[in-house]
Length: 215
Ligand SMILES: [Zn+2]
Image (cartoon, rainbow, N blue to C red):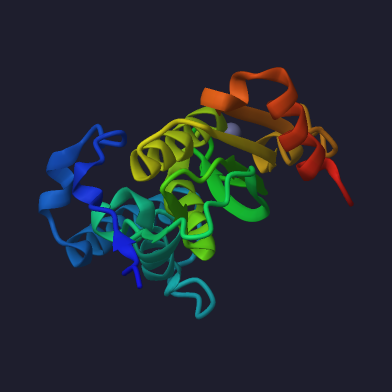
């Protein structure tokens, strides 16, 4: 019997944050600061913070930012990735498609909603399936641009698998495009990251045919 292995995430340097000092203050202090500043934003907009419906909004927003939608800014929240020995010597392409993706655009702080698709060739190891979803959600839980999110997921997988035969495709709607500016409600943004065997056109097409099925 082989024991499932664990990957050491402290080795992964692909996502060093631009402002590491901020992580020296506690999550509670961050919530307090955001609550204060969000109160100022609401007051500036002329909102009545004595209103029952609004009075707790700054605290709710602050908690949501830190504990939920931007929790991926805290490296402590990185998922542990379980790897399983590839006992069956499965050598075909493995595809996890239609992973629900919720992120936020760093230019406007409004949602990016879409799907991520990941493909890789198992060599020595297979990644526990739900772990890929968790990894996607971790990197998505930051103010993002879709291109960087795609590359970060690809690089994280490469670090976990110790090879680069992998593909990441993200299809997403940006609410900043749909609800403001050009107000285009039907356009989608597609980004991709193909490396190793996936640079080969026929391999890439096989992957794309899997993710295009039953749309
Ligand atoms: Zn935007």
